[in-house]
Image 1 (tube, rainbow, N blue to C red):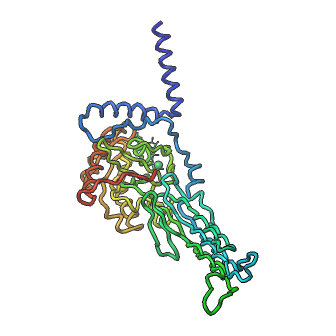
Image 2: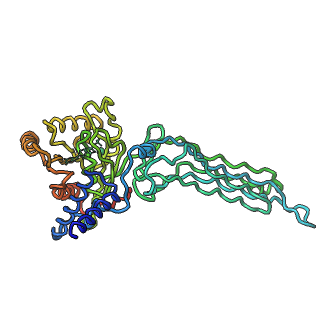
Image 3: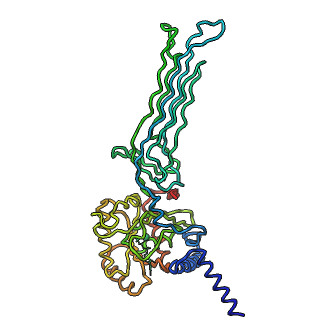
Amino acid sequence: MQTVQSLYRLRGLAHTFLLCRASTSQALGFLTALHVSHHRSFSNGSPLCAKPRNLVKGKRDVSEKRLTRYFVDHRKVRVVGGTGGNGASCFHSEPRKEFGGPDGGDGGNGGHVILKVDPCVKSFSSIAPVYQGSQGEPGRSSNCYGKSGENLYIKVPVGTLVKENGITLIDLSKTGEEFIAAYGGIGGKGNRFFLSNENRAPVTATPGAPGEERCLHLELKTMAHAGLVGFPNAGKSSLLRLLTNARPAVAAYPFTTLNPHVGVINYQDHEQIAVADVPGIIEGAHQNRGLGLSFLRHIERCRILLYVLDLTHPEPWTQLSSLQYEVGQFDESLAHRPHVIVANKLDLPGARKTLEHLQEKVKGRIIAVSALTGENTEELILYLRELCDGHRPEGRRAEPYMGW
Ligand SMILES: Nc1nc2c(ncn2[C@@H]2O[C@H](COP(=O)(O)OP(=O)(O)OP(=O)(O)O)[C@@H](O)[C@H]2O)c(=O)[nH]1
Ligand SMILES: [Mg+2]
């Protein structure tokens, strides 16, 4: 009987894992998360996540292939404001009122084309190449003014840079922020407008002005507080999965991650730290080796960098200097950002020995973790908060992350 019961229990467990679509390593991560959250419930007053991570239901793994198809972080767009409506030229006509005078109304103004930040929009994939604002209606007789064209809103993600001829016009970094990309044309004047003592019967009416036309370049720079930088396979995505509710793909081959992923660490005092995972960097990336360095623009705004090193590598300190060199080639200021070294894969044999060597060779804070077992991730979470608090304008709380 007991055997039957335990068989049922096992089948239940297997079913749960199937539902979670977990592979063996994910299953281990799942168990680890259970362990971590259990541990956390005892860490009284700890600022760690209130919500157990890795157990977010209904959030599926992101298919990198699909994401690559839909993730567009550059877009050229032509925006044309709506043309103003023409002014009308007509005269009042009524029985027994022969010379009623001019009564042509003005045309309505053309609609603007406006860029608006929407946190639900993740990339420029749904942005069309051309946007034309709606036209203003023409003026009519009896001094009727034409209706102005409706404004056309283009939804863009948080962190959109709008450039024109290489010059940045605006950085749309706040939810709901708006930018008038192209003004609509002014409506034409009706002949009533030209009535004067000198000219009691003007026939002149002006046409509506054409809308402004611009060719803009939209560029997306992901908004996050901390960025994960490392060689391929170092375990950046595994770390992001463990620390946050993001679900980037994890696999044992290099360049699994092809697009930026952002996850959020929720602290018990409602502080949030957004962490961005980007593709791996290899030596010579500045010469376009591997996936190049252009994706680093997604961590350009990060206040803190997390250099993720692989402790199974015989000399992880060389990995670190290569990473810092490559990052510096992309942007000198990025190389001098506050950072922490995350030595990953502590659970693997020989990792502790390599860690000792790493500690001897490298100055600065090194936090050794295992993204697979969750070992020591608490220290990383707390230190990340410390760093974030230390690099924030005095007395200011972190702005809540609005980019998901
Ligand atoms: N044993 C062990 N394996 C790990 C650990 N962290 C990651 N891995 C494994 O290392 C492999 C690569 O992990 P990823 O998280 O995809 O690495 P990545 O840095 O995101 O790689 P790219 O996306 O290719 O740049 C996967 O097979 C993980 O299961 C760890 O702490 N311990
Ligand atoms: Mg990855």
